[in-house]
Length: 185
Image 1 (cartoon, rainbow, N blue to C red):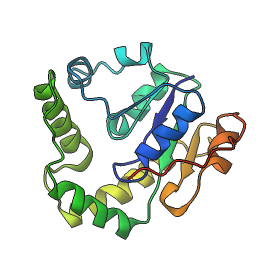
Image 2: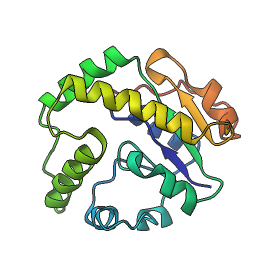
Image 3: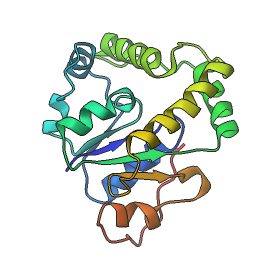
Image 4: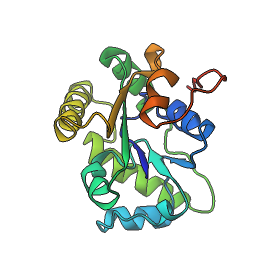
């Protein structure tokens, strides 16, 4: 079973990743390496990364969840949510910062994949309130429509509103840890 976090950026994807790791899963949060970039941009969704990892979170997989669903039957999908106005404010701040950091040795591919994914998911490299509002609504509608009638395959969770182990653990058939659910900003 693979696990895919298909929530948009700034909806608790880092917290989800940390929680999944606390439950014993090896999860890649927003991978932006050369190999992943080459695979995604050539339509190869059977990602090499998934040979080593149990799943991926954030917008790396957002545009491709139907393909990943077909390639990995029995996978679990987690749609992280956030109140829309709070999400838009967070995205405005996020887009306003230098969110394309340079890290060696694959900095060129990190920038390329981040630009590719921003274009694929948001349709913009810059904050545009009207566009992002549309993307937010469309993404929720499309994911819910795709997984309609599949509560065992899609979990919706609003980590920013305080939801956590109570929904996540039963969905993944894991016991609830005694540790506090992680909240990462």
